[in-house]
Length: 627
Image 1 (cartoon, rainbow, N blue to C red):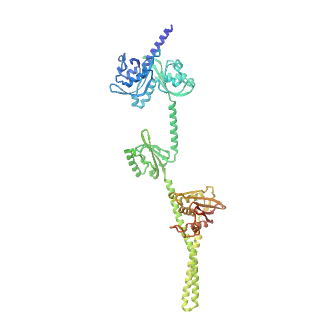
Image 2: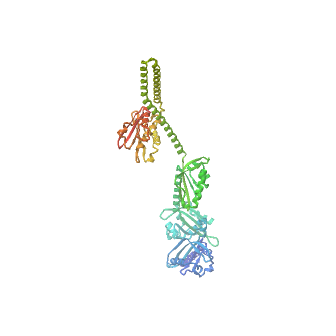
Image 3: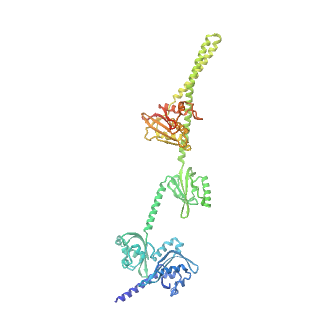
């Protein structure tokens, strides 16, 4: 057989193959000459555009579609000048008034000499894609069989033995093999060696023959040895008699999509981990107030499981009054979303699954996702904080009561000390008077002497009573316990420095946690510290600084309260620890006197250091528990 005959047979075989591919191609294909007259079309072209083979013979594309505008004519002109033009989706208004959404590509075809012989139109009607998201994936796969210029898509046709007979530009870009290098090779060269050893390429072709199509995802090999994740579809191509004549294969590079999906999953997992461990309860809701998510902390706080709350109104987590306010707020928000929700922190009443109503602090944020508003609420249970506050108030009340008792004791001690000497003098004078009167007229003065003697006895009795009161106060037993200096100081600062924030004063503690424990009456020592702190507050202005420290002093622990105030003048220092002498307009002059009584009752001492204009330091000692 001559070479000419072989070439003619090959041309005839290729022509038959082209006709069969056009016959069975799952998309509309039209081949036109330079005058835009039809040469060949696929069966899908006739079906999609309601044409018959007889109606297109010798006809111009513009005759069949007179509604085509200048923009389409310009696209055809660009293709006739060698350019490939495409669109992922575009609206196409037909002459009968119908509207279709079409994905298309226009490219030139060339004669053996290289000159342009016309153009090829690839179109796919995607109206169903626009109308149905489910159908979109299937239509996209079908379209990718035809558009070889789509990035990350490769189109090739195989003969019955799986050898490459058509290799498009998309395949060349994706795999790196040129058309010359790929044509005639078994398509298994595109698979990993391990997949070739297991027979995966042949298995996919066999499945396509038996079932019409085979879809798979697996790693594929590029020319440079790198790999990518391929989403591959192999379809069996059959002739009019139903005989298999080859296979069509479309491969989509899923690597970027896979990497994005993996990154998105990692971000979601990270966010979920954060939300699952955040100590505050978190609830998200839509614009209507229906719960979208319910964190583990929220489940623990309210007692509901996520399944019991999701999709229900968030008002189920509120007290009846707050639920009513919430529903009204949602109505206002729905009527005017621009106003936004109330986002500032506020205290509201929550309701647990058991029906218990409790206080919580709520923070609300707003975000937009997919065109919808999402409200996020962070909630903090205030039950423990309220309990601590109640304990603080109780302790403060107790301290104030002890302060009043101590003040009364100090007043009694002072009165006893001040009145004892006058009463003794009265007794002495009365006794002397009784003696003098008794030396004169015995009959008249006897009664006076008896009366004066009684007065003397009553005066002595009064002195004894006052003396007894003083002794009672002095003999009062201390309720000593072993305490941590750091904890004692911290509690005293909470109680004594209530006004610091209002006055702009800084009150800090530098008492180390390593200090040895002390053996004291906790309430009385806290009272002493509180008096010293409040005295410092009274002399400081905005920007003042108070520090409470402690150190070991042999078998004692020394507390120090330091301020940066004006210091103590010499005049004030002379009466500093004397009761009832105060520089304060409303002071009783008993604070430091009480401190000295408390410290001395513990066996310690109290003193001060000052420098006028630079502040003061008050020190006192109490016994160490170790000593």
